Picture 1 (tube, rainbow, N blue to C red):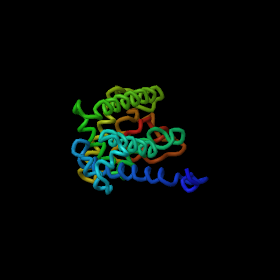
Picture 2: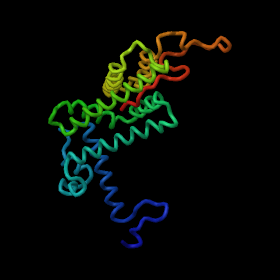
Picture 3: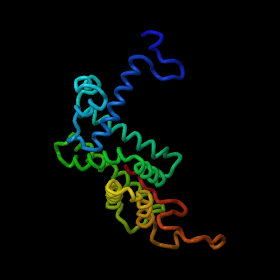
Picture 4: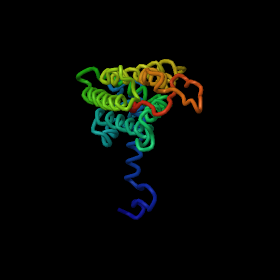
Length: 235
């Protein structure tokens, strides 16, 4: 490796490696644009390669095929969602969920990709069928445990079934996202907070009664008081 190709202190890689990584990322970016519009089945390597100024054969020097490229697009999408959620040590889970919803509302391409591909993936032959089935199972299992802890701590209504509520949280988020993709006047953040506030909070008003020493106005719909019920980040 020549001196010019070695990474300098405090700087990223240079030379052919950096060029290859930049070209690979450009392919992923264009693949996102194509897949978020047409889904996996409708997206073609030929169109993606053309958008990057390459031939399909040249694109295959960077990715073994359409499935590998698609997997990298989904991987980067998941990383962005995790970054949006923030550090669990610094944000409550309900705040993480709100941050993810807000992120999705500013990331139409990524949100569209998830909506289209999750629908396509109901086909058992789809390359992401098993992955999406596992995503929903894992997310529901995580949410169920969090909801049970919330019930024990008095933060979540005790008259809901955690297993059903866990699935309902995903269904509500997916439904809100679909409506927003069809009509951007839909405010995903406020709708999700409305759902959380009205569905998960304890039904007993005494559990959220204001202090007699410091009376306060009733909370606005969708806002929280005291410790918020725990809700897992949605994607």
